Length: 184
View (cartoon, rainbow, N blue to C red):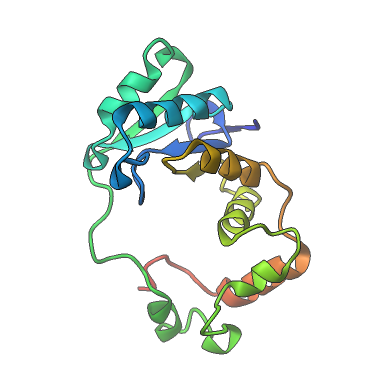
């Protein structure tokens, strides 16, 4: 597992980090037991992840506490109060309406499908992790899952080589004018 400095701190953390929210909330959203979620976090730590992102809104802080019991001094835990304002997530329509993304550069039925045409790309998630991991300034990459095998797939993607040049060129052509994540 690679290492990186966390933002402007002097904290040295794994390049892969695990979030305890997201769509699955460590599997809690689809019925995982607290014990199963604890096992996912412990597997992440066993794989070398030592940076855990949580928040009160995720309702997984007790799971984090159980997972790090006996290992608390070997992990960095980030927590926050407000995760996001509902209704502010950007959409592709907003990015095209603002002129930051030219709709002519996208296939409406498969806007990012061109990445899957590249043999080395295993999935859109793989492409996203690889793109972010090798983008200057994005030193620590957050992943989130409720399944250990999915966790290992995500870590493998984060630790993979950068995307091929033609894929990066097309991504930069599409998104090179984006100045904000909200398109405002």
